[in-house]
Image (cartoon, rainbow, N blue to C red; front, side, top):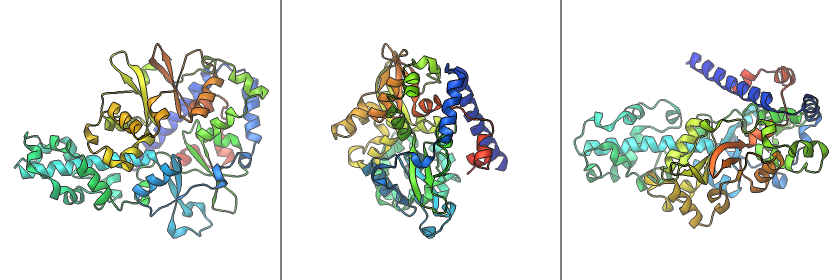
Length: 442
């Protein structure tokens, strides 16, 4: 187990190093300019960064149910929030006060595993009802019957799911003789389980925040430099950085990738920014990902498959393409999982729901019309400034590079931030007093 953990840490660190090495080797900015920018960001204190809207960081109690947490994120129009430990709410130690961060990534991981476990329980129940052997349940059933991973930590067991759905399972659902096929009819039964039955109904944020975490919880002090924040949000792949004032464990600010890119957009008119923003994206080495590495989803694929690809490839969104030519027709992001949870009456057949139908249903409710249906695109000769403007004003996390409507590249918030900085040798070891390996293991 320890060896597996060390391998995971080494892989994460190697990935960060490889990404940033590629970024800096491809940028065509003069070295003196890069050094000047890095030095400038190192002198800017984190306390100077604009506060979150209303000046109050939204936090979620650890004993909040997952369903209620989704409502908070959706109502506040945020992607994530720090999680407070109610047993240490008065502690002066932030390590005790905060358990981590809950975001849509963690929720997607939980929902997908919950759906798979529930599907297996349904399959197993119907298999028993029609006299099928355990082997007919399939490989997924064999794996989930001995759940020992995050699902077990969150209190999700096949026995519990089976008990919850057994009453609603009918033998005729497996009339084709294929028990796994019965799982595809889960639909309303799944929503009944996850929203109305135990143990899912009462599953709390605390149960999933560490088991399904996407990234470590790494706060910085108000007197830290903005360079440390920019490196965490770019090279080290964090999507948000909590800010804590020395001697005060409460989070004072919450800096996200989106907020930083919005801040860059606000620098328009300053010589240093205009000089860089006027350059074509190719001068910055963008896109950093080759076209054959782009993960996409066909519009007639299942929406559940879209979320699985995001989970498996550790990405926050996918271009929706159509046909053999892979013409881009839409976009689906990890935050869209909230529609499945907040509007179950609209998606009762979610296991057969295609991406196209999912998008159409969301649009019919009048929500997210621009973000979901219209992919934000640019050309290979676009300037960095125009890309930053699109990301900031459209409030999206990625922009697709297209050539005759075919996706040839993608630029993320992380990529844009990376264009402006490089990491001085041993920066985190010297600045924070701990190694990158320790940071990634928190």
